[in-house]
Length: 343
Image (cartoon, rainbow, N blue to C red; front, side, top):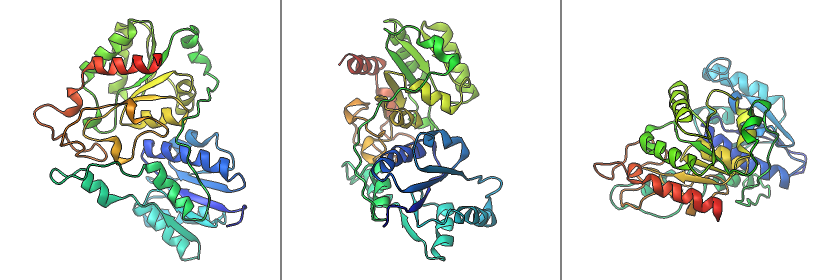
């Protein structure tokens, strides 16, 4: 392909997956600076792509303007105005397939992600499990561009680049000597959430040495929980509901470390170059969803023959009476964080 190509990139959800796409597109843009990318995703995710050169963000409104087949055809007409040379379908769902089909009928080249469904199923079997590391999801994304004849070599390294701290958060960063730890203790699926009583023990332990703790993620219920923690423990700050995504990204980029579940918090931290200590339950890094550039040695998890039994964390643990994630001791997490910060 020539160096003046335009590629439409499709990935509509979920938040963590879209953040991983942004990590890949950052490197793609660096290696293919004359290629124009049109990223199609939900408007809430636009801040992930604001710092990528030669990228236009085009929002999809799946519940209103672009609802149903008529709405998707309208989206196709909007996207057709870019005169794309190729479509990179990084989602492979009904919506992305419909858009791709419209373009295929006009002769536009289409390449689609291979999600490796069969090998992921084998990884999560109860018996005859095939327990081995699968291709990383970011490499599956990159393969789509390689199949469009572009060169793309992922570094699998995080690139820390602190952004300007939002004005209303600057008072939280006055002390330059304390380590700044983000905690993202919630997840879309409850089975991926570490017991909140035990997570509070982690917060309590980390507040004692004088670390600054920043709690991210969640809705109203989670905001109330984080608010209670911030009242009980020194140097603990509840950021939930107080900043928009652009501001959160800027704050996270100034942290020393993030503690997260296998959730979007891990991928957002990865996007802005912050190392992550991640906690895993019924899911497993072998499925390919470890944060971009993060280390498997920084994953806190237990060994059990039933793990993993879920790819996305939407199924309960099969490890016995107590969930595998709850078998992890708070001090194990705290020790890993201290080791990472002092290493």
